[in-house]
Figure 1 (cartoon, rainbow, N blue to C red):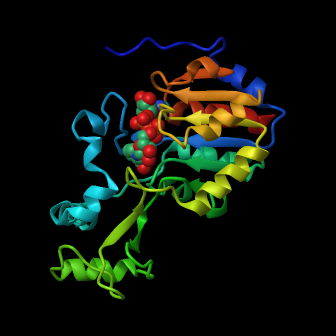
Figure 2: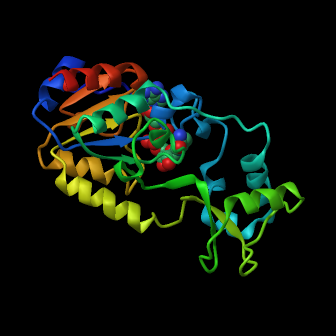
Length: 260
Ligand code: NAD
């Protein structure tokens, strides 16, 4: 049974804009929900991937030990009919907030690159769960040319290996059981230390350690705005909790902040 939404005291865009209007170092924390309007399913929403897939299948151990799992994953990644996803109004609103100097940065749990596709520069994003665009040599960290791996896969290598050492290759996404990328975590922690407010969007705030970043800011007493469809694990802590789609709420909220 879905638990009831625990509403924060105030729930309107105007209230959120009021609490954020004097803030210039807002941290935006995003989860899979911001990309559902681009056609990418989330994990735990009503149509989430965990309704039909088992999270235990997406572990580092499985990747390292199961050739058939890797073959399937490379097949999905390089499939010629793989859909191309585009950013939506939620991603674009965050890029606008950055451009207008209100934001310290965006910590994202997403691996889809849609913040950057919407115009947020690389230096404005910390991808704490990695990204789906790169490939690494698992054993020795040799540089890997993604186009070369793709063309070898197209030539019939179903489980392409590192050209330098022959070890298995792996996407730069973070699998369960894998450490988070240290560079992204350091950047995220720096922004968390320097932020004067946080907006969490499209996340159940249930995946750790990522969720500690917004919670740390909320814990200092700075404004904590949640924009989400459905409950999160931390609605009780929100200064303002807005129930709604990121693609509807964020343009309105960002518009109000830019208008001052
Ligand atoms: P989650 O699946 O736990 O939660 C997503 C939340 O967003 C749910 O509460 C859902 O109801 C809500 N939501 C769905 N559509 C929304 C919308 N249009 N507007 C506002 N809210 C919406 O996701 P999470 O908290 O990010 O944690 C899960 C993990 O999922 C993360 O580690 C992330 O790496 C991974 N993931 C990423 C992608 C991606 O890159 N796009 C996709 C699936 C999962």
